[in-house]
Length: 399
Image (cartoon, rainbow, N blue to C red; front, side):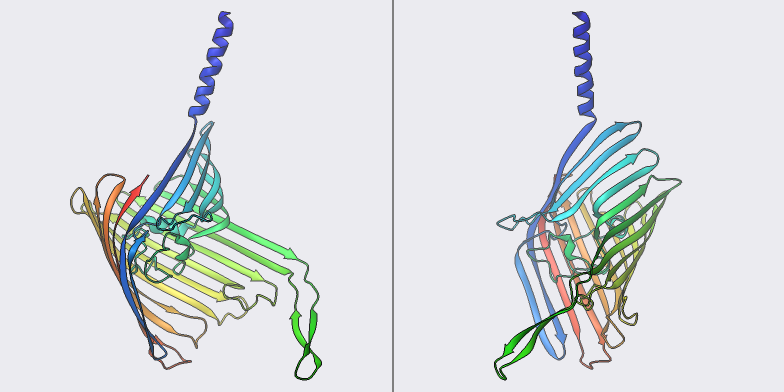
């Protein structure tokens, strides 16, 4: 009897220990407030304007809901997962999951971790450590620019920001090392390749009412062929006392062997991206310096490309124990596909502040502005320009 009681007690204790070794956390961000701004542009001699004034969302941080968990496998090894979806607090319905991250990984203490799934790229992770604005969705940040115009009702999906670099990738295997002598490395490989037999060309005919004779209606060139989407990247962070230096490179390639899609933007192209930055904590404030470069080149014609480079400096500091402020200013240049397409210079700046009500809740005020000027084109002599300012007052809660 005593032996049985001891066995039951031992099994109960073991089960309790096993449960304690696994954990799942629900987390998220809800960001809502007032958003305003205006933009004016001139293109080919025509003026246009945009104005935003509404109770919006996700001005400081994209709203989200996430689940993450770990399981201790013993011997310093653990398994973990993350699933995260974007949220739109001002939307009346939630129709579909908006996948931000979804991956599973294994970690070995003292060595590093390996993860598979939809994940952030090394450049995106590095920008979070070396940026004064920290992924806010107001215009004026030239490293993390807004591609959808002024922040309005649908800015909670960070996928829409994809001008300066690729934020995340599907089908990714990522490796992260532990920190050794101040160095931490990241590498990834992404692959989504498909081969199909190319179908034979077929032509269909229809009666031409004008001549009452058969005429070509459509030509099907086949839906088969090769569709290969691959990517790889490397990132290195070095930390020495209060200094952080980060260098990152990533490249994505799309190869499509099909005349149906040969001329579609983004298809049959190589996208090379690099980011270098430094951050230093002076105690009273943190200072940041950033540089990014991106070049997308057609695999069919190397003379067709898009190139964008930008540099930015910024500071972030707690002015009082509850009031935090930041500022950034930067400029850059872009050139569209080919020598006959527009080139432009751009500038941007931001001012922002947080009033921390608690560790999880803060009020914020952000103002940003951007200007695009000196647009020139061999194909057109028209003077083009774009100027915008964007501001927000809101509340953000993390849980």
